[in-house]
Image (cartoon, each protein chain N blue to C red):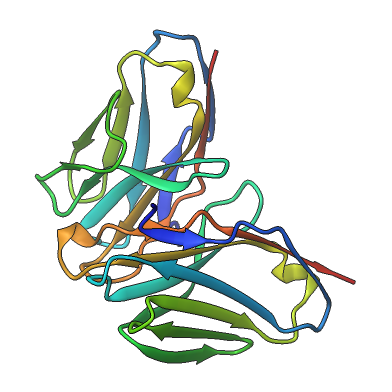
Length: 112
Length: 111
């Protein structure tokens, strides 16, 4: 079993929809949680960064962390075609050289 | 505003050839990483360097070596390339306990 599980999709939604992306994990030592967006043939770019449990909002994006359930989510409101990309969750512990463990990524397509 | 710069962007190697992938960051980060990305596998850590002068193995280190040349530069070497090393390679850097920033990747094909 992988440390971080993520549904690979693909997920297809109409423009303006609310998108929910999720990851589950097994290592209770994870404290730092990130969401990256990756366009085709590009490097991952950071979208959201949270520490421990709770919610964080940035424009149309909201990240949620539920450490008791070992479950993190990314919500995208008013989705746009430009949101079409692969979304990767990542997490790390406080020690261990800040290594990130990634999910496999969810491919999202927002259609007109 | 360069961030993390990787060279080359593309490379084709024959089985058994060697090459070095270069990475440099200008954000004064202590930690640097090499990942490989394969379809359906996500990003997997090859090697990392928590600080200048130190390197450690990640999840998939076999067939690779690394050098942390200085605080800015972290190179990845393939001594004898194999078709299983065909992948997209990403370098990343971070401060301690913060998010990592990625380069644009090197697409390597081994034939």
